[in-house]
Amino acid sequence: ALPPLRVAITGGAGQIAYSLVFMIARGGVFGDRAVDLRLLDIEAASDKLRAVGMELQDVASPFVLRCTCTTDPLEAFMDADVALLVGARPRGPGMLRKDLLAANAGIFKAQGAVLDEVASRDCKVVVVGNPANTNALLCMRSAPSLPKRNFTALTRLDQNRTAGMLAAKIGVPVSMIRNAVIWGNHSATQVPMVTFATVEEGRAVETVAARLGEGGERWVSEELVPGVQQRGKEVIAARGASSAASAASAICDHIRDWVMGSDGRVVSMAVSSDGNPFGVREGLIFSFPVVIEAGGAWRFASGFTIDEATRSAIEATQSELLEEREAALAATA
Ligand code: NDP
Image (cartoon, rainbow, N blue to C red; front, side, top):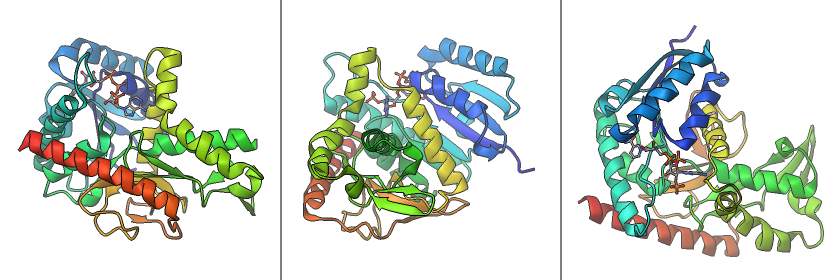
C-alpha cells in the first residue's frame, strides 16, 4: 500500500473545514489512501480546533492514520504532500476591501515561505481563502523552490454551480454535463462559459445549446451567468451564513482530480497563467479549463476558442486580478 498522504488544512476550526475534514475522513478523496492530517488555525481558535480533533477521532475512520491539531505552520506544513489553505481573515465590520486584501496577502505570503522551507517538493497547494486567486499568487511568489504549477486556487465550486444550474434547467442528471468551465477570478467578475458544454448520455453527445433550444442563449447570459456569479450571496441571504458544505465538496473534487487525474474530463482550476495559449496575461493565478493526468500533471485544455463577448469578459476579470496583484504586492512590500 502507498504511504499515507500528508494533508495540511488551514482554517481548521472554520466552517468550511468542519465539512471538509469529515468528507476526507469518509475516504475516496485520495482513493483508498490513508491520510496524515494536520489541522492549523490561529491561537484564538485553538479550543474550537481541538474540538474538531476530538470529533474526528470519534469518527473512527480507517482513512485517517493520524490527526495533529496545531497553531504552528511549521508543524502543519512539514513534508506536506497537499496543503488546503482555507483559513483567511474574514471581512470585519467597516473593513475595506483593500484592508482585507492586505491582511490576507500577509498571511499567504508568510505561509508560502513556510511551505517553501518544509513542505514536500511536490506539495500541491489549493487556496480557498479569499481573495483566493491573489492569495495563491502571493503564496506562490514566496515559495520559489516549489514548482509554480503546484499553486492553484479553487474555482471548482463555481464550475459545479454552473453545471448544477444547467442540469436543472435541461432536466438531466448533473453527471451528464461536461465542459462547463470558469475563467478568471473567483469573484463576481468570474466568467462562466457554456459555449462548449455538452450533455453526454453514454455515447450520445449533444450540445447544451441544442438542449436549451430557442431562447437558450438569452437564458445563459441573463439568468445562468449572473446566477452563478451571485450564488454565494443568495446562499448567505437564505441561510444567514456563507456556503460551506458545497465549498468543502468542491475542494474534494478539485484535489481528487488533481491527485488522481480528471479521467479525460475538462475541469476548472485557477493556475499560473504563464504559458497559457488563451492570450491571458502572464504572472497571474487565473482560472482556466484544464485536463489532469493521473499522477497530477495538468495541461491547458484545447478546443476552447474564445468568442468576442467572452473575450471582453475575460479582459475585465483579468483587469481586476491585475489591480488585486498590485494592491497585494504594495501592501506586502
Ligand atoms: P470559512 O471556513 O467559511 O471560509 C474560509 C475562507 O474560504 C474565507 O476566506 C471564505 O471567503 C473562503 N471561501 C471561498 N469560497 C467560499 C465559498 N464558496 N463559501 C464560503 N467561503 C468561501 O470561514 P470561517 O470564518 O468559518 O473560518 C475561517 C478560519 O480561518 C477561522 O477558524 C480562523 O481562525 C482561521 N484563520 C486561520 C488562519 C491560519 O490558519 N493562519 C489565518 C486566518 C484565519 P469569504 O470570507 O469571502 O466568504
